[in-house]
Image (tube, rainbow, N blue to C red; front, side):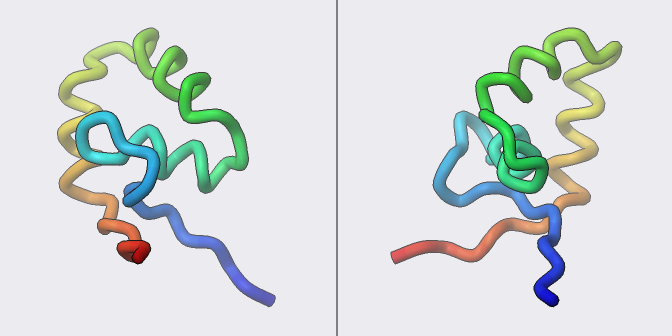
Length: 61
């Protein structure tokens, strides 16, 4: 059984790939994650923390 891990996206990134990585992990559109992220209180601080905590995804060729 393969366990999917939360990683920043290497394909779907606008800035650092946090929203794209969350969308890939949850299996939803990254557009939805980005819209939902706008409503998170202190979203800039949360985004910076997630960027530092979530590892980078594998690069694709």
